Length: 559
View (tube, rainbow, N blue to C red):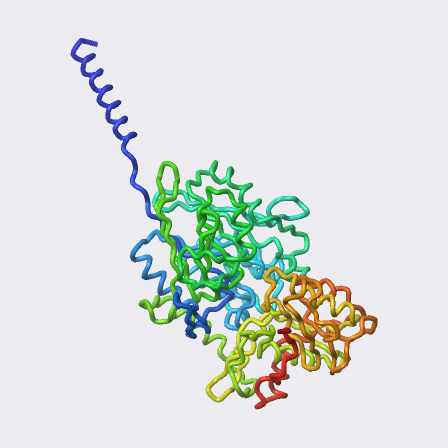
């Protein structure tokens, strides 16, 4: 090589080195990642009643949510950012209104596919139909635990295009995860790791047979264990999707709220500090809180709210900067309609119309609300418990118990007070059967005391009880002895510890679920095979025109 060529080659090498050095030293601009989170949709394809607390503490009742409102909002927001990432924190289905449950929740899975959902933590209600049905919802097919409903909306079912995540759900037989624990989405060149968990108390939230052979581990431990694996797979920023929640007296629109309580607080504190965003669910309450340096959010239920997240991510380090969150009410008509979703929901409603519109009875004084009084009772709760007792009196039942979580909605009606099947089914959507058994007076008292041992030990944990049964409780007394002595009565007579009483409960409670093992210890058991909804609709016909049950307190909170 001659001297001039050697000089040129040296110059070229020096020039390239300088260029590369300059590129390496130029910091890359942060990338804006936009996420939207929903939770606890529960098959609510249509809008529903929502009591909204504004930032001034005032309550407003409106109709919100549903697939059309959510689709319209997402369509508008994706015009601002086509790379917007939609995620869920569980209970997409389960306890669904008839519009979805009539068809084994297949329309809701299809709606989520249309919305572009990418991933969801598995919720406890995803196990309502058992592990087999959950896997069918994920992968499709017609082999279902609900054969009378599956693949009836369409001859085939393709399953979810999004991924269910359950990092803490382990198959006991193999010791391996039952479903994936995480997934990684690439957004604007940034690899976003999504790790999902369900509350570890899931076995107490579903029928035991639905989770047989599965173990549910600690939520935070499961997340932390996967972080090295996710980073090795390229995840630059990690978001936790946690189907566990809390409560706060603050408005769902107040950012950096500071009064969050409940299990999610301890879970969040245990999660590795590198995880800056924890999206939650399960407690059906909207909030935008700060916990131990992390942002913790939830978006109510039924699509009433969506949580919008914007964060600046440094491409090199994955460091999260300027993390902003907001909750947005999903008011019908607020955004231009997504015509494809409008047409889809209209089709589902048309296919379902005959069953949904079937009249049941006229009920005075509707709506009958789930909102509880200071004693812990609600109007619709009393009615449901009375219906359960009425349907089992012929088998000797003297008391009926109903778990709070089993009553899902207010009982609404038409302008003339006429209740149709769809409105009744929205109150009792699970399709549980009624079970009759014998319990001793001592067992009844023990299970009543457990009401204040629940994760949310407030009036919201109190079970509904039927007419003729009464007791008083004192919040000033220690947990485990809150019943006022001598106050537990049936038809005005004090319940005796050693005596035996015939009681009725749905099969969920009867298996000892929801933290009430005394029900599982009942003797002389009869599963009637009667669906609780059937007994409820029969009772509405029986009391037609009478309206709400007597307002005389069955449960009394001592002053």
